[in-house]
Image (cartoon, rainbow over all chains, first blue to last red; front, top):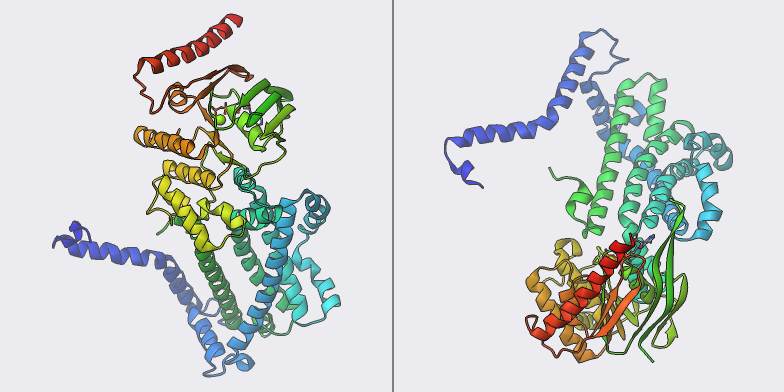
Length: 283
Length: 258
Ligand SMILES: Nc1ncnc2c1ncn2[C@@H]1O[C@H](COP(=O)(O)OP(=O)(O)OP(=O)(O)O)[C@@H](O)[C@H]1O
Ligand SMILES: [Mg+2]
């Protein structure tokens, strides 16, 4: 506490500013939601087409806890649906991370891999993952596999690109220092290049986890019969826009949580970096 | 046989972007005897770092031969410890892990690694900071970690590229004394790049004066003033005058030529 806050007259003013600082983040969302609620209740649009936030919350609550079956067959099944999506995200993301880092480091480090592997991969990269859906369905049928395949495609390239970049931009003086201390080629890779490239690799992983959620949902709309994306699309056919919105919120929330988790792992792994470069400016 | 033999070293950097070649080192011939403390003195950009990089094996000379302990230099190796102009520490490792990195590469167990590294941490006066990361240390402290790292390898040749440039006057004096003490105790060969005449004369027993770019050896003089050296003594000043006149002749010659 600074001496300013100890002074009696300054105290209320100080508290007010603190309160306002706490609120300033929620002012805009709160106004938006209040406006939306008011507009939805005014009856300009039929409630089925624009459900009020309270209705969305109601649908979400029932979907999660199953209290009055407003969400019908989905009532109480949120966890099952979320888990189905999360597993696809995790499967595709894990595969993409593993292969993306391996290929990225190989391409960044070795001329041979750069020449043989990179042109093909760079040619595949601009093809939108979504356009693989027809092939994915023919190859894998309608189940988890095409979804995981799409997630993999969406997550692989960000990891790949950032791993290549991370390895290529390693300070060449660090490599010299390693050679001076007698590092073998393999040690150079595991003890110098890989740790030096980690910040960049993590940046790729964070982009990838976002793409992974996007593509799970896309795949579930078309090629799978379960998960949050399937619920979203199915509810659309029944004009249940409250459930559509509840599904959107769930996806946003889970995607955000995945990113938070990844960020926590990153902060632990990259503790050697100053906090400003890991987490952005504090506050 | 000299510890380091440089024979007709020429280094040309090809500048592809500007489409011309840059002659950086022009026919360098130099012998540095075992246990010499050689100071390489020359103006900025004359190729001192380049010459050091060639001895270290980081760069290949365009032509000429580089021998260390009679063997042709082909690649970097732990027989030649390098203290870089920039500290060049692994930012993800603590000071002690940086110092002990060579031992880690050799597969030495952690307890022994730390044990041996601590000796050098002490030597450069960084006890209490051994578990700090480079980002938490000052530039001068990082430079000292770099020195400890090179010393720990116990190399027969130590190549130092202006290692004390980032230090304050007081620390610089201490480190200079420490380096001379280490050199006297271990009897290794040191090549020390500097552009301070005083520093060269305080440290070296052989002063190698280089010319402006393209770098040539202007003259290599032996300097055997007993240690500790008094920088205000007449002998020291005589030597300094000689070195300075070598440098001045060089710049007047250049001025006349242009
Ligand atoms: N990798 C490189 N590619 C092209 N030119 C280079 C390269 N390294 C050095 N040079 C050139 O070679 C010359 C000598 O550089 P060097 O770094 O050896 O100088 P120096 O004597 O160490 O200077 P300083 O005292 O400023 O460190 C410079 O003109 C520089 O532009
Ligand atoms: Mg230099």
